[in-house]
Length: 397
Image (cartoon, rainbow, N blue to C red; front, side, top):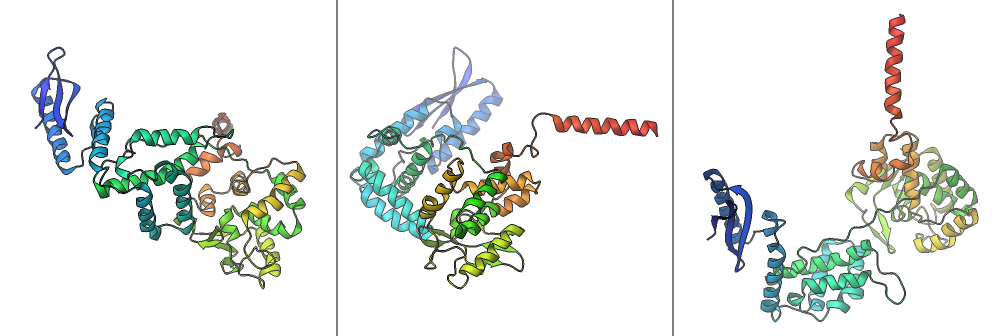
């Protein structure tokens, strides 16, 4: 049972209670009076109720307290001692965990997680019991991922975060199952630097389309002027091309040679065909409609392979033109900037790209569209001038 006490030197009230076998004192700036004591006692009762239910979060009530770290370390040590002998190794638990979760994951995500487990997590923690893995060991593991190895650069913060995610998920599930506190508590994701996009200008697009191999001109025309993702255009089937309504329906994608559902629910959409896209697809119909269910395919009717096309067509064409080599995904960014620069409604653009809202448009693309978001005050100046001219005109009348 905790209590509300008062410091003799300052006269301020503080909490005095036991949590996880540790005596905790948390000072406030409140003076000792009836109202403050009443409010603090009410808060203390709520804290004690949450402790009994196992729902108490120390950092929620006292986020700047030094006890947060101390209690985390204390709980981790207790968990290690109590659960080391009763928990499976990470290798064994990872097998069960992966198998249990495959039902809710796409095949590509299953493969990605398994790859992370095999390449990174098992070598570091495979033989350790999940209940004995400490926060310090996890932090040390993460730091090794960022260091140079064999003369090569360490992994990027974004890649490290992707590696840490399955580990965090596994240990969280194991902690619930075997009744210990996950050592990942309090470990935040690394900050990922903002990645600039490098869209093409319309002139660069036209130069590229004029130079690219003839049998891939339709493919890149559709990429540059629809904003489709690589997995969407490479997996596009003729059944989803509606020439009557002039729409491309995005319903499936291809990842790792397998057809899957779209990236997100908002990715399920219908893209309106501009005339240049309509003409390109009509031309492509004459080439592949009788050969394959896929709009763009190889001579055998199989869907295109991204890496192969990038290395054989995309990069060589950029080099030939003297253009900066960049990801083929920049075609999507190019579409967005061209649409916005042309004055298309941002909400329409977001829907065409498969975004849930317009936030990403203004965050990523506004600097490429001078007339979209001005920051020099000129728009306000024009508003004032227009108003003044109207008033002068009215006076003369």
